[in-house]
Length: 165
Image (tube, rainbow, N blue to C red):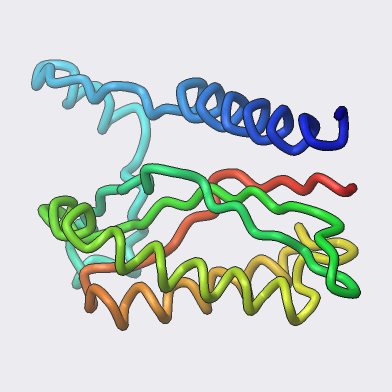
């Protein structure tokens, strides 16, 4: 009985933790006061360095995909762990609606990448190492740009967890 309830319980805890982390890590609201803008620019230099003057300001917005991804880790024909991954997509300003319209296709492509990553052992051992996550991000970015075009500039892994059985 407890073996049947454990995955459901863990999924609920993981989802709750993801929502809590999302609320806690939500960006602060942008201050619209033009009067304070002069003081802020004097106190701290802009984030862009002088090397990037020709590029102009880079404006991006972030789209958090509606649900987390649950990926089974299969070993010898049995599920021995579950990965829970939350993803966001960095897009150019104004492209948020396009992502939401194409989200089912994007989720399908992301799931395939995540399943392939799991089958290749990407979620084994130190699965949170920088190199391992860079490989995963690059694969996710590739399929996102294939599905949505160049409006996608990056894929962010906002939450990742593993539950072994």
